[in-house]
Image (cartoon, rainbow, N blue to C red; front, side, top):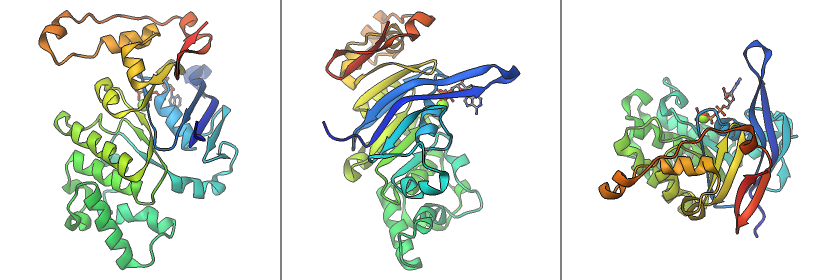
Length: 293
Ligand SMILES: Nc1ncnc2c1ncn2[C@@H]1O[C@H](COP(=O)(O)OP(=O)(O)OP(=O)(O)O)[C@@H](O)[C@H]1O
Ligand SMILES: [Mg+2]
């Protein structure tokens, strides 16, 4: 077993909801992510996927838990000590336009992290590097002096990805990075993530809800329900042998591309109760863990 790149132990986040009622957004979440590994995070809306991503990135502070990145505890680091950590950990969000600065050329936007971290020496080197990054994500380098509104959604997400890889991170947290895109180009962006992972040896924490895409891209998958991980397993083990009724329901809802089999598909319904959310993760086959009482 290699040393994990990221290790999360017993992570929790409680928000004060409307009327002072506590919202347990994340409850006792633990997982490891190996270098070069893609871990998918799936589950219904509000299950705590984005919160988990934000906690890992230290965009928010956890209520409890430990986060170890690259062998270093980062949950206890003050914000000012996070700068070297931020170099190794980047983010790609769902809405590619919101992430961009409408008044900044996209080339400048891509170069910003390199300037903040003083990676390139001077303007020429920066422009050359930006041109390389544009090519790497499938954009024409001559576009670098244009503004975000001149690009399509898919191109905008390519720009965000170029920025994320610009300072050679080890980990990218991607929060539904294809959900807002036109269906016809989603596969292209997923392929780009896949290619870059191989070429650059990146690890991803990949929040998604398209399970067919998750099956294609991810090495392992964690299923979240109401703040908990209810099942985590190597991808094929999860899809072929789902154990938790919630995972089974999620998988039964995936359309099958073959019409005959699609007609025979029966979606399972599942209503979670507290019993299904208590207990602990138990290993049912190698690397395959299920929440059990
Ligand atoms: N800043 C906040 N203040 C209060 N409650 C919050 C905040 N952020 C998230 N929550 C609540 O925490 C829970 C988990 O939210 P989160 O955004 O992590 O879910 P998600 O799995 O990413 O959902 P989605 O699939 O809709 O993006 C939800 O109940 C949400 O309403
Ligand atoms: Mg979310």
